[in-house]
Length: 59
Image (cartoon, rainbow, N blue to C red; front, side, top):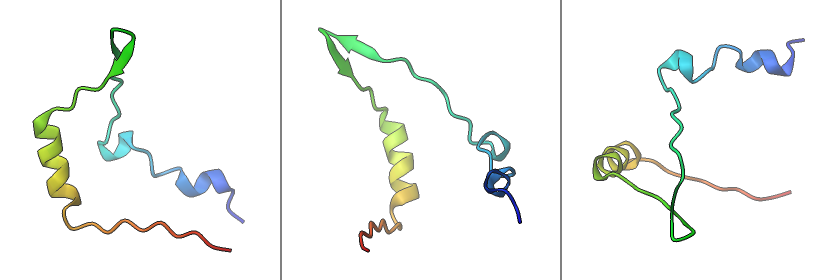
């Protein structure tokens, strides 16, 4: 039997060139502010344009 952790041993983001970068929090007047770049939104719109998101709840 394969241990649970070994099922994902080869599925690491860094090995698939999908590195995560830390972006520090911007606080203006005590409020956290998010800066979204237009080119990021455009790229993500193309990627998700033909996607279906499903959320199933049941017993």
